[in-house]
Image 1 (tube, one colour):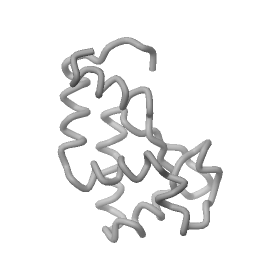
Image 2 (cartoon, one colour):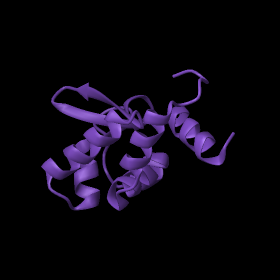
Image 3 (cartoon, one colour):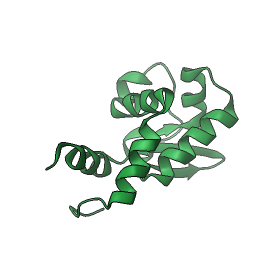
Length: 108
């Protein structure tokens, strides 16, 4: 993403995705993925590809289908990106997109 401001539709989609308390919690966890997921052995380099969905499932205590649905919503909103590593899907927060959302909300 560039420094281009979000469209109204993009902002609404991002805010809808963040309106769910569990999705918001997942975003918070992904902001500090090394600290929040330190107890889980990484399957791949977290700095590069993010956190494995199996670790998100374990930490949240939710069903795989629920976590997958939540992550799909966050990805559609552009707030996270997924990467496949073997049979595992990893998710990483899109820091630029999060900054764009914050800027739009704060009127910057």
